[in-house]
Image (cartoon, rainbow over all chains, first blue to last red):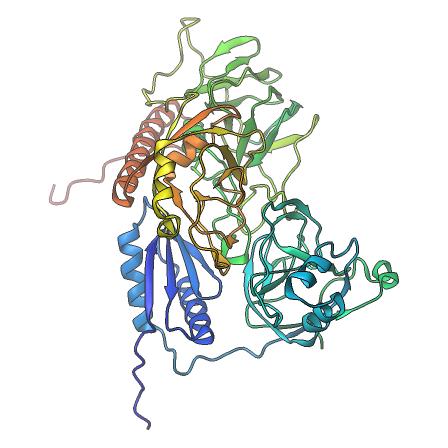
Length: 243
Length: 337
């Protein structure tokens, strides 16, 4: 029988975030390891079902842990997170086989009003931006705002994409956007400060079923360009994992 | 026996509860009653569990008709409450006879009021909560004629001396003011703002009309981030104060998107989030720095106040035979007797 491996807990910072939340940041410096750490921690907290702990929101290198400060406290939750880190097995974590999603996108024009500006900022032309955006297989890193948006490590652009100085009050469902070094699809119409480079005709969010969105962190996604003429014929179809 | 009520004038009202606490893990905001203290108090005063569905009214007048005898409680911002044409008190249980109209007019000083009905009512839920989510399009729409079925009906509690309040429960009501002081703790990213972070405590801020349940936008002197690097999207707490634009401060409330890429300057305390929920456009806000320990103590004091109210209500309602309250229990025989 092999001797059990004792893994040291990954480097961690815990920051106060008001009286009802803590921000836990993994600081190993390895993006993959930090992502795995915060998602394992969030999963552990979700199954532990601790009194007063509402849940956890893991993203890239951090997880927001929310709690009811009447039933527990920042101090107690902090101690609990440290305990969780000792309990977690980072050595043999079983990873679910990722599902794969294909997303058709109409780029530019009224579908992607920021495409040309993003291209100019990157010193590329619009076709290069589209090529970069479609050549990559993205890993869905986390579910974000609004409404369970699939947050992904962005295309390999030369520079980070600045967010809009003044966020839009309304960005349509299906908008395909980039910001910083991230990419995303908007499942629902909402305000947004990201640069919109295209739009998918597919419906991402179905409010009549749980879960509301078809993917989970760890799933994979690819974009492909479609002509504007194909938008209407695909509109209303649901985004489903490829068989 | 079940009862019901009919919405006559919805104004701007929703059926809600204390929020979708399981939502953020799935990328959905918590939402729910923005003034949690007033919402809990309303449910407690109506003899309900804290988290049962109730009505949240924002700013506008509201009327509903009871089709059966009901017991209700109205809390939140000061307003004029009439039941069957009689003036009735806020922050107390109120009997409504079948056919009578409940009218709320003149919500003032604050912005939001809550109406709880004994027995609550049956409404659709998502992830365990009926709270509307405007982004995913979930929530029961209240329009003229909407009928809500309540799970219980309550015979009127009569008061022989007309004009005297039926109950005097002695709850300390929150203060409502046009110049609220809001307690905040340092945000996890306060250092990124350098010395400009202090502007938050030396300036006054005016609530913009663009404010809503997602966040309040405040005009005033803006702290400025000293770094230009992009921030990875992170989970942000309700109450997070950000500076996303050059014009306004953004204070996230319960409808906030769960992740954002703006640094968090400060976080409003749980207790002060209830106060902010009552801030109207044009009101002037002053921020005051506190610690997580003090904020927790303040929140717990408010919860204990509600616990005392719950205990009083259970005794009173138990004696009056309302709902499933406590009854006299037979003492079991002492052992050895």
